[in-house]
Image 1 (cartoon, helix red, strand yellow):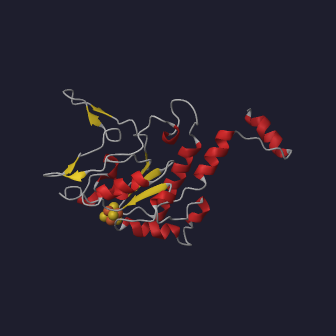
Image 2 (cartoon, rainbow, N blue to C red):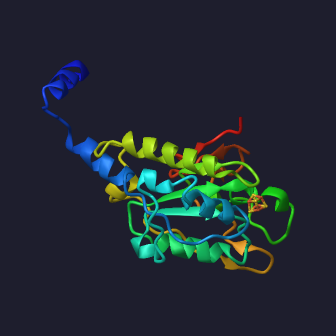
Image 3 (tube, rainbow, N blue to C red):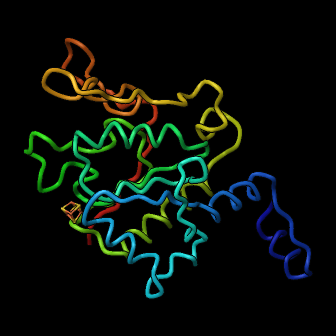
Length: 219
Ligand code: SF4
């Protein structure tokens, strides 16, 4: 509908919307995070829910203790290789539509422990991440910015067509393989479909099909 007409009707007290706008509004206004944290970044996540930052303004203050009732996984902290399988398993247990925010340098890349033998170099190797937040640790404002970015992303989604969200695509991958300890490292070392895979023999890297993430930048 023409935006000018819509505004004119609004002035007369007539509100017109589409099912898509209503559906997206409902999803973006009730993103409930899962209640878990991994390391120091979790303290900043906790601070975001307190009165000073008041995450309730975004409808996201209800941290759920069960993955079955959560829409959003905030990976806040260092993901050790011992913990990575549990994080993937919890993600698999969440119902669609579900989202992931990777919070902090550790969650997005291994951070200060990147060279450590025991730390995963980014959770996006195993599960699809919607928003990456850099920083060590990112402040609560950065997490709020990530929420706003996620809300914008949900708002812009089309319910039909090739670019429809994963939960409306019957062919989309629902569960992701849970890595296990092999002889030297986690196996598989990444999940195809979410992490760029090397095209054999070419040296080129191809983005996985689920890799539609957004990265926040530090000012
Ligand atoms: S990014 Fe920094 S603050 Fe966050 S978990 Fe890693 S070391 Fe801790």
